Structures are given as C-alpha cells and as structure tokens.
Image 1 (cartoon, rainbow, N blue to C red):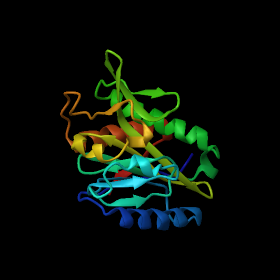
Image 2 (cartoon, one colour):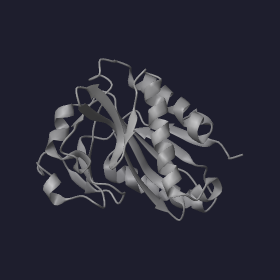
Image 3 (cartoon, rainbow, N blue to C red):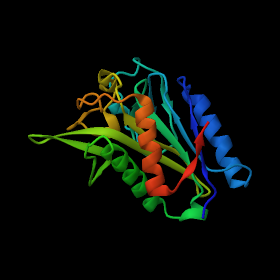
Image 4 (cartoon, rainbow, N blue to C red):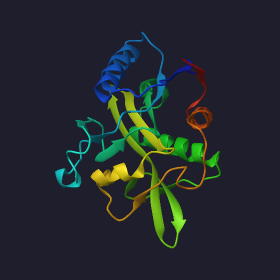
Amino acid sequence: MFSPVEWRISDRPVAYPDAVAEMEARVAAIRAGQAPELAWLLEHPPLYTAGTSADPADLVDPDRFPVFPAGRGGQYTYHGPGQRVAYVMLDLKRRSPDVRAYVHGLEDWLIATLARFNVKGERRDGRVGIWVDRGNGREDKIAAIGVRVRRWVTYHGVAINLDPDLSHFAGIVPCGIREHGVTSLWDLGLTPAMADLDCALMAGFAQVFGGGENPS
C-alpha cells in the first residue's frame, strides 16, 4: 500500500515559473521522504511551453504569448484559462520504476476521465496525448501529456481542455502535429464546470493509480 496522494487545487492561475519552482521543491522533498506524493490541479495564464524536442519552426507566432522552456519531453504546448493542468509528483521507485508504464498510466487516467463525460478518448500510435474521433476522418486532440522524471520522482504531467480559447493554439504547431486539430469538452457540446472536471480527474486517478487525500 502507498501513502495517500495529496491533492491540491489552485483557484487562481499560477505563473509558469512559480509552478516549476514548486514542483522541483516538492520532488526533492518526496525523494528525501519529507513529503507525500502530490497531484496538483491548476490553470496557467496564456503561455506556450517548449519541450526538449521542440522545433523552433513550430513556434508560429512567437510574440503572441510568453514562451517558456519546459524541461519535459515533447514539443510546443499551449496552456491557458479553461484548460486544467494536472502536475503529478509520484515516486516511481516505490510504485514501479518503469517510465513507459507510467506514461501509459497517464493515458489510461485521461481516457477514464473523459469516459465520465461519455467521451471516447483514444491513443494514436506515433502521436502523444489523447484524441477524439470527430468522424469523416477528422481527429482532434483533447489532452496533452509531457513528463519529466528526476531520480524516479515524476513531475509535469497532463493537460485536458475544458473550454480554453482554441484560437490560442494557432500560435504554435501543437506537439508538432500539423494534420489534426484541437478540441475541448465544450467544443464537443458538453458544458461541465471545472469542478466537475476536477471530480472526474480525481476519480479517474484513483481508478488507475490508487486513492488520495481530500484536496487542499
């Protein structure tokens, strides 16, 4: 059995550098046995992040929003209001020291979360994240994944689109994929509140990774 995962929900947008500093401090504390694992739900102000594989040509409009190097895997990603970011700090040494299995678990988590809104999220070979089949050959991305692991403690995590301004994604080629679009729960005709999405995320997380404490 694992100690309960702590949940934290931030009610106001968190500046990206502040979030990274908080994650790095928590990773160190988890590694030292001084803090429990953490799942942190938040929103960011509008911004772009560049993963370690980002191609500068995919930054279509570099002056639109601030751009931050992320240190995580992946390419360019947008974060902003209406998108729920979940930063996950788990100790894989205690759980399973297998990064590939962990990423697969994140995918399962997002798929389970979407299923609670009767949305079928799907994996795609060669494409990171979770996708929705819109019919007639159209597929849109609804959730992104980007992780980093330091001495077997994870950080960064996932982002799922509730109702962000989808035009903000036009400043980048999201995750380097030009052939497909981006969607959200609201774009699909569903209108849950962010609190509803948080509940679905917590329930889906428990299903895949185990239970947690009440959010703080």
